[in-house]
Amino acid sequence: MIWLLLGGLAVFALAPLAWMLIRPARLRGRAEADLALYRAQLDELDRELETGRLDAAQHQAARLEVQRRILAAPGDARDIEAPGRTPALLAALVFLLPAAALGLYMVRGTPDMPAVPFEERQRMAEAENLMLETLRSRVAALDPASETGRQGQILLGNAERSRGRLAEAATAYRVALDARFDAQLAGDLAELEIERGEHAAAAALIARALGSAPQEPRLRFLSGLAEARAGRAENARRIWQALLSEAPPGAPWRSVVERQLQTLP
Image 1 (tube, rainbow, N blue to C red):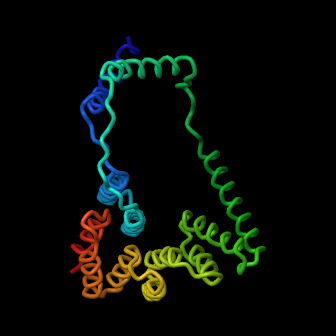
Image 2: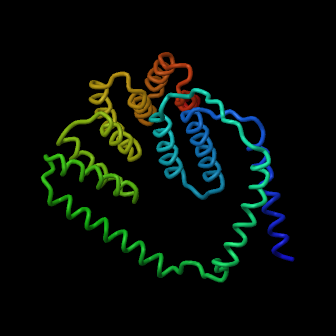
Image 3: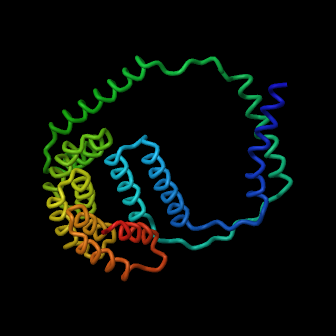
């Protein structure tokens, strides 16, 4: 009886999906889909802050990362007509997929499998730390002026940043920039410096990067963000308003800039 109940619940859960698949559809361009996903992520971060699962610093850092992805998203948002679908086939799949999943679970499933114990998670964390130490030692053995050494420093910076070691990540990024300046990497480091509260260092990096890419939206956005975090709201407003005035109407990052403008005093 319980299996019939579970199967019925699965069919009920998939019914909205079936309707979405059967009705005439239009597929949006990748930029529009990405933008919708990023907006959902921003909303979820706000909910995490409200419920206390993120503190203010974690919330701000996570929002900044999502905003960076929006600014780096491709700008092609053209609509694409979806090909026709066969309603009968889709309707059959709604019933067949849960049945197949249930059958597979009954054969292969292990409902009594215990959760990963704390000791195992601790061992996994220790293994990750060991891998990071190995990466540090190998990168340190490379010539930082070589391209291999430079790429190693970028990889190390990414790894350090993912572990929340912002100062170490900034050091690795700077070594890579000293080997060869790159506007994109300078933007990454500037974003990191903003997270660390080093607004003057971020502004200097952005100014240099804008010298080689003066119209890069992400760099201009970060320039305004550095000014805003440093307490210079009018400078930030001027930078972001200029960015919006020159932005294409369909730019996927417009809403990010507009939202930041609304936060200024």
